[in-house]
Amino acid sequence: MDPFASIARPSASTPGWHPDPWRQQPWRWWDGAAWTHHIHSGRSQSAQPRISSWMSVPVIVGSVVAVLNIVITIAVAPLTGSLGLLLGFTPLIIVFPVLYWLDRIEPEPWASRIHALLWGITVAGSVSLIINTVFVIAVSGATGVATGQALGAVVSAPLIEEFSKGLGVYWALRRKELDGVMDGVVYAGWVGLGFAMIEDFLYFAEAGLQGQLLGVFVGRALLTPFAHPLFTAWTGLAIGLAVARRQSILANAFWGYGLAVVSHAAWNGAITYSDEKQNYSAMVIVAGCFVALFIAAAITLVLIRRNQQRNFLKLIPFIAQRFGMSQNEIQVFSSWSTLLRARRGLSRPQKRSFDRVHSALARLALLYRRPGELDTVTEQLLADQLFAARNATEVNGEGWLPTNP
Image 1 (cartoon, rainbow, N blue to C red):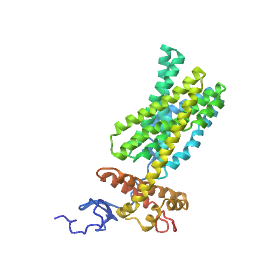
Image 2: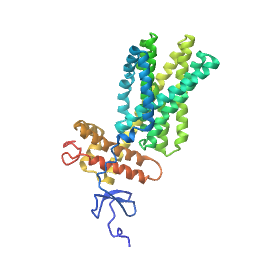
Image 3: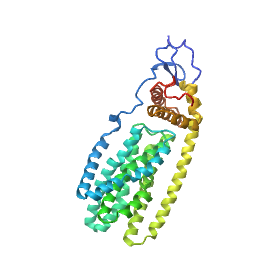
Image 4: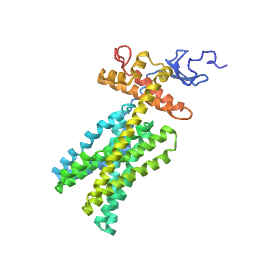
């Protein structure tokens, strides 16, 4: 005889965590038809990413190459190298607020964002530098230096750089950190930002030696800081769509990578052609197209963000009932303005706990929006993260919650 059969069903008929009727633990899993043996204390710390889990082997290896490259550059040209390193942080100052704003609906762990940034600086930067250099040297030997450099900019650079940056987005997917379209764009943005920083450092150091630092700095750091994040965003967008729609990751990544390469090649080609022919009309046209593309991408991302925000708020009552959230929690997360106001009133440790709750709720909302049968394994994992985040601190009897949300 099933020992669970005599226990009353929960009010919800769908699978989920509910108060344990045997009181062995606070929560027991209801699979939609019967109680199961899966119980939960609600205090697991699995939602906390550890340094060993996000500082991956590729980033560590890439860091060695990147550091050596920086040291050699500064050793060869101490003044321009050091200045180039400082100016290389300019894209971070400009692009960071945009990525932070985009990520507010479903905030990613800072460890994951830093890992994506480091991937762009170290892995993508090192791989691209090595392969592009070999390509240019090999082609220059057969066609001449000018042709080799031109082909490197238009052919090798877009193919290799977008592939190595795209791997950073795929790495986040493999770690189950990418849940939808906005996640794909955000991780692509962080990877692209990291790559832009290390590439700008090399360009600025070289331009300083040639007496062209001001022009290169204005062109790369001030006028086009979003170039690399925007190129790679195609790959992130495609992978995010595949996750949200349960489509083939490989097929979507292929067309996303293709668009990233084409846009990157067009941009590099226009710059190369303008420099060689001393005819900057082509550059003006492509720059105008780039601005139009940037505006279109910005509008699209705003619309995606608003849609994700609406879906999040719409699903909060369902999630609250499913996982036994308090009325105070429901009040905070049912309104975006209340959510932001509540977060502003917290201390820094409480904000970290609040953001983990927010992230788990948002990931659950994205999971419930996916078409097809519910992935109960992922739901249980996210429920574990939600329980851990809700019980991280104890303040005012409501964990991280303020007294008056």
